[in-house]
Image 1 (cartoon, helix red, strand yellow):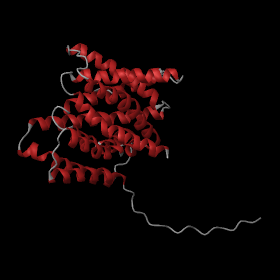
Image 2: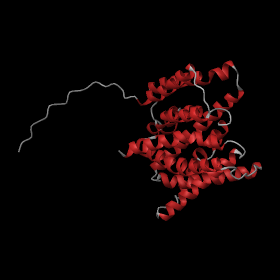
Image 3: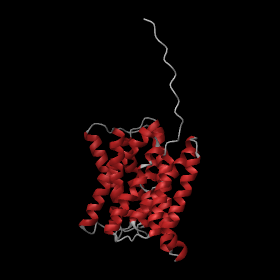
Image 4: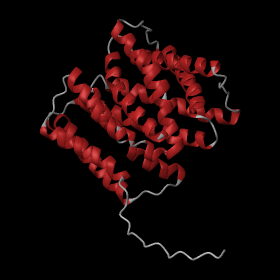
Length: 303
């Protein structure tokens, strides 16, 4: 039951964050928007853990991996996603993000030696075909450079996210609680973003309106503090590959919101593309057909 609650919570929360990210695209530079989000989330995390008496500082040998998790999950990936939202609808970004299941399967093989099965290859082909149908008309027919940028940034952001999953898997195996890793990871991530803002001379612009502020608070408190905690708890409980199955359902929520609020227009090719992309992710988790084996006869016990 706990895994089901974590799974549903992650799907609902992260399925809605994409539209909130789109609401932050505008006069505030991307680096600053991502900084606002994770600085706020880090503050909430540290205060809550401190009040509960659960604030722990990981050992020095774990610090490089906490920083790596910060770069992959709480800064670099979202720099990509926020920039991508300037070029393509947020719902389409979530479709590309759903390929994290395939990214995770490949990276788990590279970093942990997990076996890549035939179904992973089939899933990759289905996913790539689906994306081609979703974005092909703009990329290949109309040669829309902005769509290329959006797809590329989304794919790069998903790669960072997957690498962050691998680091999180390592941290959990070392006994670091997801809440602890997230609290310090978001802290390091926001500090890294602040350094980037300073080095690039990016202007720090205050939240321009109520919509931006509410979106930022939702992304920080719900999307980051709660969402990342539920997701990484799933990673530690059921593994990175199976936890990434939550991303399969994100596009259903995100594209529904994108249709309502961003005016995303569905075409027959787009519908088929979405179905293929989701099918590619589902294939990874389909249970293999096994023959039923009759149980061995019980041996009578003597009394």
